Image 1 (cartoon, rainbow, N blue to C red):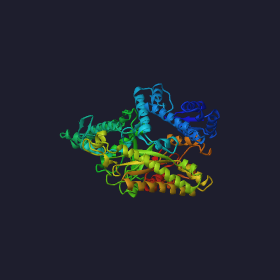
Image 2: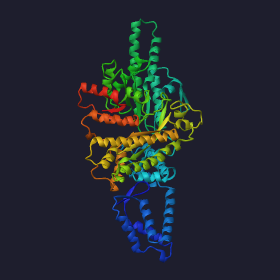
Image 3: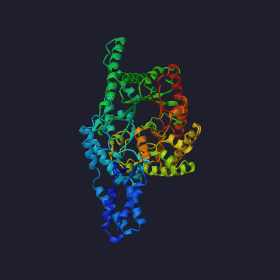
Image 4: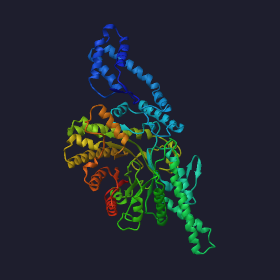
Amino acid sequence: MKVIKRDGRAVEYDKKKIEIAIEKANKEVKNEEQAKKKDINRIIKSIESMDKKRILVEDIQDIIEEKLMELGKFNLAKKYIVYRYTRALVRKQNTTDESILGIIKNHGNSISNSNSNYMLSKFQRNLIVKEVSKDLTKRMLLPEKIVKAEEKGIIFFHNSDYFVQPMILSSFINIKDMLENGTIINNQRIEQPKSFLDACIKTVNILSNLLSCQIEEVIIDLKYLANYLKMSKQNIKRNLKQLSSERIKEIVDINLNNELKMGIKALFDVNIINTANGEAPKIYFILDTKDENKKENIQIIEEIINYQKNYNFNCPKLIYVLNDENNLEGNKYDYLTQEAIAISDIHLLSEKVSFDYFKYLNYPLGNGCFLKSSKNKNGGKFNQGMVSINLAQIGLTSQSDEKKLFTELEQRMELSFESLMSYYYAFTNAISNTSPLHFIYGGIYRLNDNEVINKLLKKDYSSINLNYVGLYELTNIVLGKKASTKSKQELAFKILNFMQDTLKKWQEETSVQFNLCSIENENINNYFYKIDSENNIISKNFKNYNNINYDDFNNIYEKLEYEKQISKIQKGNFISSINFKNLNENEVKELINYIYKNILYSQVN
């Protein structure tokens, strides 16, 4: 049996530690009030008879207290509780020593050291800071029931290693405002660019500094750079007045093409930057063919696609907007789409479905989530944080009883609400100077110096995500593996509608936007699965947790139709995964056209 310590480490069960703890309490009471050897053995046997693969150290202590009470050893139980409390105070002085030493010595269970640069001091510095933050978060900042719920695999509280200070999770940045109206980086005024190359270099500077002030993705729309390409064209022309029109055009085309290539290279060079937290940047560029500077915008998109294809960069990633100009139905810019979908791991966003869902073209904020308010549709916006809920465990604990399932789900949703609101309360009354580039100098908004950011925590500017894991396993547990696919899908929709209705109620009560999101994160899935399997509450028929089982579908269209229904319930907070391998040209065209008409957001390989 493994005992899970308070810092998350798993150690071998040792009954001698129980004996020592009770004996120490024995010394504090009279002989007749002490627990005899047979009493201690009985307590140990009751713990061992549970036959668990994994047990929390606090659960062991709870059992000891209960058993001492049952034996009528009330004074002894009191002394044991005091002993336990005193030990807790000692631990609170510093619980991070072992994990920090583990980082420095390149070992330890609480961290991943698969990165080849792990021993570099800048990475270790970041990991040490994270361990301290995580420790403070669990001991001081989060309610104990949320910490315990995570230890039991009920929920997962993301980014606890950053929670000690209010820090944006991901954002869509108003790069148009920052370039046109200027911004400030490290107390230096950044004026409006005078050329395309200048705009690209300043965009990279803005991105690298923003990424050091938040945790995950920054997303920007590159169509606002088209105006600066136009500006460069005019700058080159201005210096060639004495030449013939043909010669001017030739020189302009050559110089502009060179500047275009240099600018795009500068944008992609953001890939070599390490953010302040020691990690590679997470950036998405939006490519939208519709812009008032159409010609220049298309030139930029063409060069970005060519650069990505030729150099196969993993970052920045591209979000390509499908619209009525490029949906492979014989339109003018279909060639761009054909080039774009040849890129590995590109994301497609349907303008048509976005208008169906939101009445405007809505860009994701990261993790496939969209801000559903139309009031601030063109401005900056951000995610405050996210919590994941283990749906599979609900199916396991409700013992396949559907009525009991929804009672259990409701209770765990309330716990999730408290967890999610922890992010909101962490940001409440934070001042704009917490991250000036986001809150003062145009990234999200232009607040005054030292102004509280509270109005930006509402649905027009930001959101909080509730992720779910194990939807597929839940439907199988409740209905049985032999149940029809249709009945499982109907139960899945019922569960998601219940969750979405609950989030809507929360939003009405708080004016905070809550997103319901399907998460396909291998680490989180495995975290929940491991806890449930070690606690012997999961069937050996399951090998991991998923939200969708691809074997349930005969073809890609069946899968997409099911995902379309999920996306409608969640209003877009779902990423459809699509693989074009082994499809011929006509099949690809048909699939792209289907995506344009039906699927809001997809990830294509």
